Image (cartoon, rainbow, N blue to C red):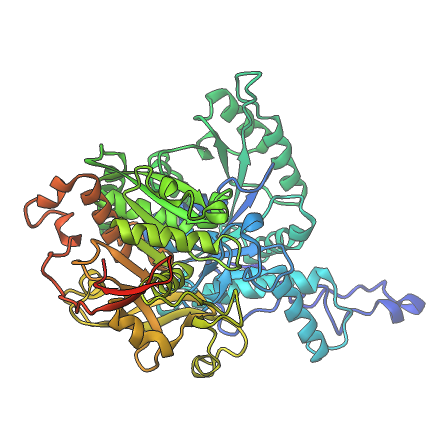
Length: 637
């Protein structure tokens, strides 16, 4: 049973006289650990993952994989990422410094680790699964101003740490399916042990384990085993010192996860176990693998899930039948990852943050999901559009690419290069997927080169452009209740029948889908009719307002040309790849090997290849202004 830190301290018969007036304790307590109403002590368990030596080792991968193993056993799990920075959210963070910004269904802009949990657990998260130091401090200061601390001097301990424990206990009560209780809360602390900004999180977790009692909390230390090339062997000293620092903070780890390039040797594991007081069977080699999605199986083979059950006394909550079904589904996916691939394709990703792969991590994972299901070996080529222009775009795109993705982004740098890339893939029939800014680039390119609107642009880059085909619309902001911020989170998209979008998303389902958005500028409704008449079909729209959300070209014009204002990569899951990526990879396979498109109906590939005769589109006469300034008419090509 959890210990009760709120009980009145025993009376001290020797406490009297002059000092007593300064040291009275009858009216208060040194403990400040608010408990949510209805919280059941002992009902919820906690697993805390902390990093040592260095950041970026994969705490999220380890934590989400472990959480998946418990969820597969029928337990309800609720993850939370605790960041040390003072930002209220991740929305303004530079991708070069922090990787991509991920958006949850409720519009929360958060750390990219949250998407790892969503993918591994196949579970939508919300703002309760993400917290920053800035949020904690803001809550504390607000409570202090409102008199929430009854005149106490507000301090890091116990008030700030108390707020952290309160958030964790609230999540335990409501982070399960349908807002119900969670059996286990997985807590990932960003950064490493020893970072000043994370110290109060670590202290709060120590206090939580003390208050909740025995078998309530499991601590996992993720460390790094270095292997200097000059020595040619693994060294454990840095890992030992990092773990010692965690123990110096009052936390004894129960499990050690050792990141390394190669499998950690028995000698190193023995040293880690001896210096950390952790049994050898609880020291796990988390070395590089062919995919992060093979980590859960490796953990299961090592018995880490059973160790967690023992540490937290959870065996009586396991559902063996549920586990067998879940493991069968995941094992099938893992086998496909390891299997030889039937197809080889090359996909180009054109962006301006290509020097930092984490800036487009979700796109890489979405490609991996689709490629695994379609048995394709994908070679991803990164194209920095900052130096792409008319003189070199053909060489850049024409170097054996079977499909091209133009991802999202903000700012003018590299945007004209993206437009050049869109023009190249459109005219050469290379399969294309535009995402967010890639949607806007496709609109501008079509307006310039098909409609002849040479002054077409986005008001993001040129507020006084002649033809603002992409603009920030005040009336739409009012409709969406956005104020001066972006359009964020999950929104409904109404699909148009007999389109590529309808074929991909809803061949036998409702024509309304729900996708995640993160943008501020949109297609200007005043140009939609003109663009549509010219062959650019807007096949996905807001259910009630003139907000364009998917565009495409007819198959007679282009084999696969589609773009979305939303971010399809954010909702792609290992067992449920996103339809737009499935369609792109399938089209790339056929471009690389036309014979693949002649497979018998019923194959995995056939589902994503749209029949050539589907969805006839009008072929209007389009006004063209060429480079010499003369005009003429033609059909889209």
